[in-house]
Image (cartoon, rainbow, N blue to C red; front, top):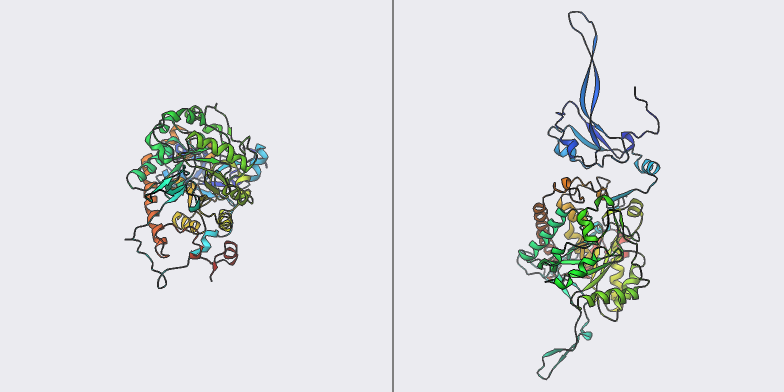
Length: 547
């Protein structure tokens, strides 16, 4: 008989337990083959059956070996609750069930002696989302004319680049009263107000990245929607740098500077300028923690693009050599503007924090007029890998901090000069249009999203601890893995189709929200259109309270 010790790990210690019905199982092996975490394995159980033959009871025992599926009892190969086994089982014989008695956070730290790492969003359950307490409450009916969302023409464009106020525009009339340009103006690209956020080609599988890139190209070329995507840190393939589709890509440089040698070498061969440069100072999901790409995801093509060995790739928590906001403007913004001869807008991305307004105020006063955007990322955003303690306990919600930055610019009379872009848990309920509209009415020029894009592609992780194994390189959906057999589960064309369809639906929904308030262009700062059912939220955001 097997000896059981108190400190042995059992299924009841793990976050998910496998519910298995042997009577329905045909031992086809689909579930075992599909489980990328090796959380289930085939085993043989010894069964005892008592029977009696003849007219009088004569109990006899027969033993037989029965093949079954067993759950792995390990803190390394444990069930993440992804449900792939249930999806492929032809007889509904197996499925994961959440274990409310889990001891996983304790035993993992005790046995491993290391911080828990994972991907996804924070898992701590909070109260109702701030955005869900806000409604579009000012409807134009008798006072102002509302618009017909089906027939009216709408201008759904947001600026990426510095906007000069009228008095600073370098235009003067000549003798014929024609405007003459005295000097260059800052570059501005007008793009769709929902940018696909920065997710690197190391964090995502190459098939996922290909699917997103195809969707962006189709939306621009066929649908006339100027959607842009951000590369994330780590560089991009050289063939993309030399292609005409680079104009739809925002290139990101972060503190690790990974992949930028390739980008610099490709500059003389670029046939198009990128849509912009985004300098990432911080990320909302793990502010002050730097980037993290686990060694198991550093495949050969990632090593080639980044010029690194197969090892954990850690970006510093800040840019080395930058010690002040003013210095970042002088060194980074000027250098990148110079590199592209001031044709490409350069923006900055920071994590929402108590100091965000100070950073924004300094950038607004930038005397060079070259800061092309302020990207603000909140705590509810997702990530491919982070220490769980950072994900759950570090950061700042996005809504109030966005509002603070906008009102700070209004106080100085400089609103709109540096476009405000915000993110961090937008579209958590699946409805990005409503969240984007509310953020724009609170002061954002546009929003960016990452985790929702993965969900469009088929990501099965959620904010309640399901899957969230992006960091392991064993993504069962083939989205955040570099393992060929797992990546090939993903159909790039289906990914592109889903993203395109979602954007088309979102475009309709944005118009449906803009029409009732009588706006044919983005309602940036139209907080008078919003009301809140929560008194504290209304007071904090300076909007009307309703009950």
